[in-house]
Length: 481
Figure 1 (tube, rainbow, N blue to C red):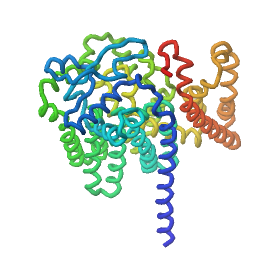
Figure 2: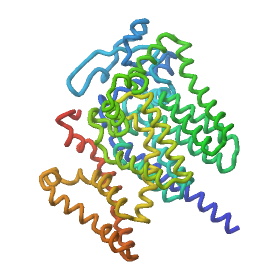
Figure 3: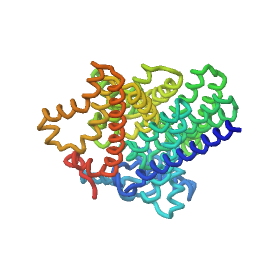
Figure 4: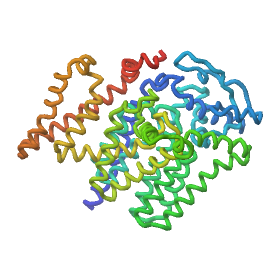
């Protein structure tokens, strides 16, 4: 009886925490979501919205395309693309066309976004961004449940807090981008496959496989989800289940080429060829020097916010996340290997199939990064050592609070900045030389305080992201009021 009451209490507390996290994530994603990023930052949002709306209303998907010359060749022109497509921040203007049937990407996320425009009776950021915001806020809760299953509730909460508050995650989650659909279905698959390992009921396996297939129908890069779930099953030596999962996912993905067969295979095939010209391995590697090849890889794995396309080390959270991933490998166990398989699956797709330059291609990494961040932070607080303290403070901590330090202090007063850094590091340095219990407790308290400060700076930075971005990059890309 007592055990049943405890289990019921745990279930209720899990549900409560899930919804608290959901609403925390939802608040930041909703804040000024219809205005920033502005209407001309990413035209892909309009592509998915217009495609979905026209598909649902007329059964003929129409949208703008970077490959409009292919559509023109076959007479698939609907009309001129409306504002803002064709207008850039640099004052350059070009008339783009609406083309249809639009076959640039699978249609699932487009349908979800298009449904929002129809229900909202308008095609604007007020409507088209809401599905992505709701889906990714739900993802924050899913990350808590996954972290709790993999390790414990502390890891789950820490991971969900990262996903809820990291500015670059929040800014991208606001946008009607298919990658947000990918992480939604991928995390559902991940959670369901963990439930399958709990009781080996086949229904969880089938549902997980279906969800991974749906991720691939948001965008081709969602194939990483199919690979990820199959890889977990192979890791657990469930070979038959891995085959079943992979087969179901691929069968669902085949809906995309099926649309090409139904409408016009020649158009579909030529678009795939054009897509391949943007990839690293399939198109560019023969033309690159070793230095150029390494540069291309770095541009992919370190892209974070995507606001400056030719500068890739601009978000220290991403640097910290890759270090956290390496930390998982160092402290290897089955649960950490699952997270690493998620990162590796997406990395394979990123390096082989996806073009360079756009920061939102990193969105599928974000849930796994947050789980890695949580593992690192949990160890950092409980078992603080000098190296972990240096990594945390030098990367993500200063990377966040630097927005509150004047550029004069950082750039013109390096001596005082170094003193400031040493003051924060002092407890950990002392502990290194004098590993006493009392000093360990002090370090634990300091670590908790620094982490709380970090979360506060995440929130403040997100609320003021437009001003921060304008402060540092206004000379390059002016902000639209």
